[in-house]
Amino acid sequence: MQVGLIGLGKMGLNLALNMRDHGHEVIGYARTKETVDRAKGEGIKGVYSLEELVKKLIPPRLIWLMVPAGETVDMVINQLIPFLSKGDIIVDGGNSYYRDTLRRYEVLKAQGLRFADIGTSGGIEGARWGICAMVGAEEELFQYLEPLLKDISAPGGYLHTGPCGSGHFVKMVHNGIEYGMMQAIGEGMEILAKGPFKLDLPAIARVWRHGSVIRGWLMDLTERVLSKSGDLKDIRDVIHHSGEGLWTVEEALRLGVPVPVISLALMVRFRSEQEESFAGKVVAALRHEFGGHEVERKAPY
Image (cartoon, rainbow, N blue to C red; front, side, top):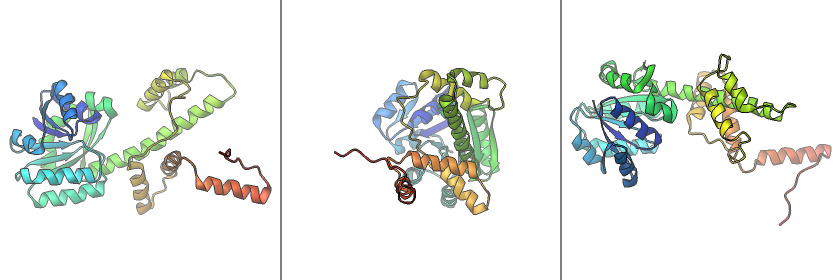
């Protein structure tokens, strides 16, 4: 199958290599010439404009987006539309908000273009060697894409979740779960690190990988990062978030579903991004006022 892939960052380039290794023709485009040149150095065919990309694709054209969620997706789609013909296909393989996906589906459908959302999990390694794909698409379009999906996914690692929007919805909840799982691992490791015993944390993560209830890829990665640097002194405790956890919590509120673990994991990320917490200062000041508790003050300049 011939694929025009837009976005050749870490995920996009690895996905392009994955497709190529399975015999698919990939033509890649990225915003910067340097990124395209790097992909060409890896053996991927590259172009330097969206118009050139579309011209090299045989109708019905299949264009796969691996770009950041939000305005960037709309910008790329709007730039593509003038070059496309009825029946052409756009796949959004990024982490878009599912309500944005529903809106884009209606806009593209009105212009005779087909659209699928593919929630893509597995990280950089998965993109290279086998993704987990959650596919929102009309049945006919899913069947058209399925041979490609089967090739680039891990065994058993793709699913037609339902109509357009459902793939990104499922991926959103997946990432919310991920927030909670990673937070629990981090908290458990801190207890072990500060406990009364001198413990080999990488070894503990290693044994938990084999047969324990909490074994899995995140535990594999825990062993890896702790083996590189057991004390993690070179890493700041800032945990950025890209939106999916927030969207999961917002959706839970709309549906009336209690999600305390995911919500608290999200709050921890918000707190980690603050250099200082004004709320924390208020609480410290209040404890001083009503109980005379000591307040830590900044050293004068």
